[in-house]
Length: 244
Image 1 (cartoon, rainbow, N blue to C red):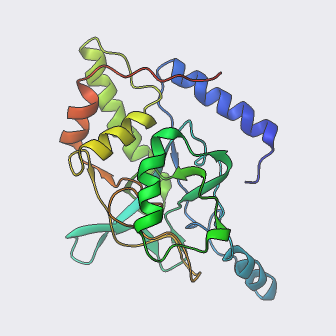
Image 2 (image 1 turned 30 degrees about the vertical axis):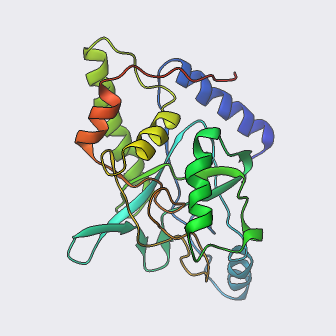
């Protein structure tokens, strides 16, 4: 959203070129839940009208909706810190998530996303989102006042994994998203801590709830360092075809 098709195509091509060079690109899922690019509008009748319209649709943002990056959502600790939930602050800011209107769903997402859409109660109206679009976020991290913290935090963890790989003569991770989804699905609870509470509604009466497995609020959950290193730091990268 908010960007021309030509600009989007050029940026996506750049992401793919970076992947060929072994670079993994991470992006914040946004701070406006699934309805806003940043936060609800404020300031009177016009703002109220805009909020009313926004609440009728799930509005993904770019580039987090690109299939060529790792989209990172936000989580926070609940109460005594015993378990994480989807990040939200006073229904004004919260982790972004949803489905792209611009890009189709990659094959590696289809099985887990289908399970989410079938098994989860409290989803938004079907007409408000593109269930065949690229689903995001992929994973999440701790967010303090925004996913602009969680994304670089997670990227930093992956940079340490790349360092370990390079020290062993292994290639960098590059386009890592398909492998992330494969690991998360095959080894639940090892590489990612599932987050099953919270959602993306903010001030609206609908949004994407967190749920077991992948969900459109927190993705596969928060990284668990030992498992992440085990599954991404030791094995050769499986080659994925990129169309440049």
